[in-house]
Image 1: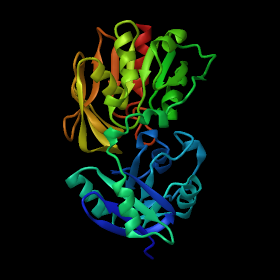
Image 2: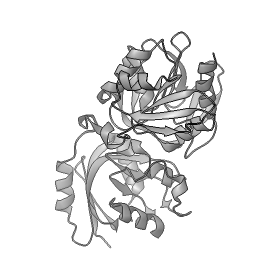
Image 3: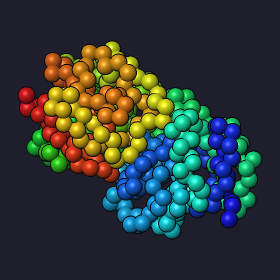
Length: 347
């Protein structure tokens, strides 16, 4: 039954079946992950995007809240070849439009060949192709969401593990996944989670042992406050970053970033360490990448396209990763990153 429509930036209109009704718009991206749909759907890095799953069946092991990475679904819309009732009902309860019964292989191929594109969706009994086209017409590029951090960050500081016997980490929340804080807490750290637009005064009140810039959605150029914190504290306090955090830190330290054609999203991205020559499998979700590393050394690269996956400086006490070492979802090859962060404090 056709009761949903996708209007794409390349001029196509695709028919589908509505599983959760509504109208929405966003940047159409895809993930190759075949598990971890709960974690992906609650990852704040998908804010203002429409997430297409390349794996054909999504929902085959139900929906469990303990796997969530945040308190809500972040993609503006969801596309799959087939969604189970559990996932469809969850998305409907969250007010997130979802569609299935369409050729997701064709969509993914289109994104790979033409890049991530704007998309409008209309789903439900009264939906029309014109409704989807109207959503597409209102869709903005990711770089135009200049204050996207406000949509995903805490508004007030939150303390995790206040009685911890390890270092104090100031986690700048640009859209942090819950498992980042959990990974630090597991190592004894007290994590002070602060808003994406926190000031040096806010950080001084904490007196952290580490300043940590989190993952998050959108263009790293739009996170000026976080970049200012990096500039303020580099050389005085150890710095760490994940995903968007790597990009923000690179920009602040003389480097550069750019938007990728279709990004890296999945749980099987191979990364090679340039010092050990070891290759590990990683979880990734990003549409921007570092092009110039500035004052930092590139220590890890993506095997597929040579983009920087790790930046470090012993002199400045900086360590960053482009992938998601907390591995939710995904392989656990890279959990040692958090040990390396704690080790900076010990040194």
